Every structure is written in structure tokens, then in C-alpha cells.
Image (cartoon, rainbow, N blue to C red; front, side, top):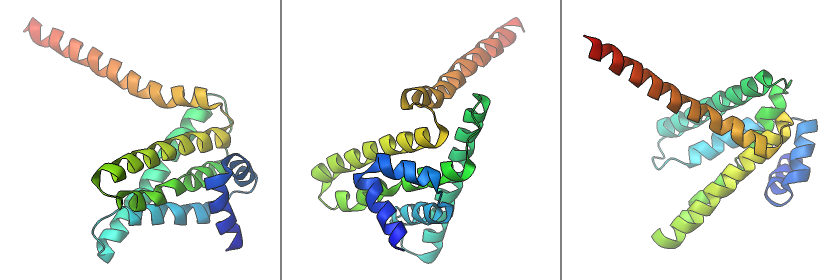
Length: 169
């Protein structure tokens, strides 16, 4: 348990060194527990069914996101370590544990603090994925953004083609 607590503390105060250490020695089970805890704490309904559903949905989202990142890295010629990617993105979820305490400060201050926690989480997730995949953060941002832009262009083309076909009739 000392290793888990050291890693949790390290992610918050020394993320660079901690991410590098976790990449060398992945801890997937601990990362999964963090992801499940973060998602279970994020629900307002504290019934066991709701907590379980939130934890499972968060776990599936975590696996899906990591699968997409792994495939993108693989398609870019990288040979990513699946367990390292899961470990690092799981541990990068630790800042989200501070979201509920931030919200306790009231609507205005809690909103600002919650936004700060959200930005912190996003930056840590990008940083962790970049370390796990061996891709610079700037390049990873493009890897994440470009598919969304591609979907927008593809949907526009599809709409134009359908409009053209419907105008022929």
C-alpha cells in the first residue's frame, strides 16, 4: 500500500518523475482501482447499483480511450506498452479526486475551482499519455484533435453528397 500512496502523492506533486517511474514499472491493478474510485465518487446517487454502474461505465470509458490512443500510436509507427498506457492514464485521473471538495466551496468559488481541477486533469492525462506513448505532448494534442476535425470534414462531405443526390431526383 505504501507504493500506491507514494505514487498518488507523486502524481500530485512530482508528476514527471512519477510518470517516468510508473512507465518503467506499470501498476495496472492500482490504476484500475483509481479509475473505478474516481468514477464512483463522481455520482450523486450513492445507492450500490448507481455506484457500480458509474464505476463500470468509467472503467469501460478508460479502456476505450486507451484503446483508441494505443491504436493511434501504433498507426503512427510506435509500439506502445498497453499496461504502461493504462497505468499512466489511470494514475493521471488522481486530480479528479479533488473535484468534489472543490465543489463544496459553493457555486461561484466551487465552479472556478472545479474548472481548475478539470484543466489539471486534462493536462495530466495528456502528459501521462505522452510519457506512456513516447510522443511529445504537442504532437499528442494533434493526434487527439485531428480525428474530431476529420469527422467534421467527413460529415460535411457526406451531407453535401446526400444533398446533391437528393437534388437530382
